[in-house]
Length: 126
Image 1: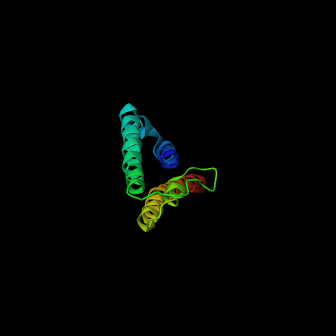
Image 2: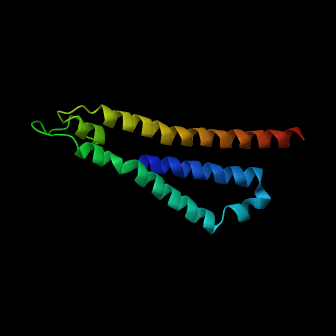
């Protein structure tokens, strides 16, 4: 959940930079205490909604026999891999959820920097 939280932090920071550069006079009215509180609630809700199904999906699996994880990171997929059940649903959820969360953050960060670059290049042209 920390990866998603960090990614979300970078997304909100990119938005704040966009507002600071492209709309500097409106920055104090947009980025205020209320915005920070809403961003914090968004972080929390998003990470809880994404991470709660992971242990639920892992708990439904049947574990018996080998209980040694082959790597040093005790990640969900490593633990799920120890079960004798089909873990396709776990893999699909992790893949789709990861790309949805991190992919959307990456796209929004990239767009904010494109808008910033466009605004800076306009200033130079004038």
